[in-house]
Length: 300
Image (cartoon, rainbow, N blue to C red; front, side, top):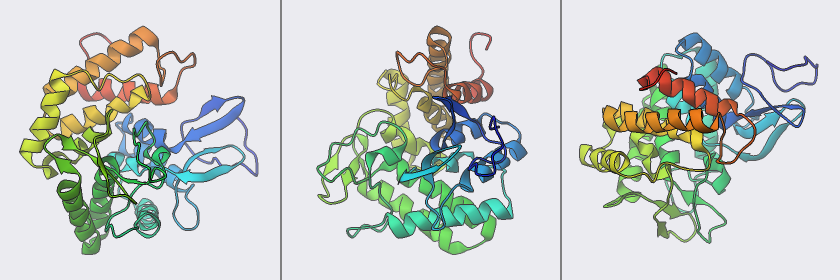
């Protein structure tokens, strides 16, 4: 909770705060990982509702906010969709519809039928895009979050329009962004295809059984055999891999990622990036989620 209760404070209710240079600070991308750390559905629901209340009048969810000002410089991916299980409520569903509508209105362009990132930073983690498109890209992680988001809205409202949108988005993901290597990104202006590095091409695993089994096996086998995902920047994001591998029934691969992260935390502490000196609530939340979902070979 905030240290001070100001009448001008933008931060209300229960959320997870980081102190940065003496100001209460919230990264909205990180709130999803905090929500995943709660086994209690009511706690997750409250955290997600308070996060989504920060959307502007059109539904744009900003990347972060401080105690004094919401920062609307750029949006953030709807990664919160992975934490929506058992959180149904009328207020939350209205907020989901509002944010989903913003993506459909403001981020669909240049002949695409689905939303794309306008800036690499909207991915929330290092995107690895190098397009000469001012960073605008159709990315597999964004489409995966949107499939989950649209599906959740459809289930909560009974409105089949959202179910159709989820299926259409999935088909674009599989038809335009999947190839023999896995998933790629595509420039919005140039339509150029690029193989991206890091963990973003593996985020579609969060879709579980919605992905073709041969594609799931290809991604999971690579994670189980290689070490490319042992990243040095935005390290807590590997919780998405654990979530996706468990959703896909690949527990051995998920255990490998989880054990590495737990060992990393014990060696370096709760940090977001290699070499950081300050602890991070994001890193702590990912740790709590991973230990809860998997357990570890050592006592947590």
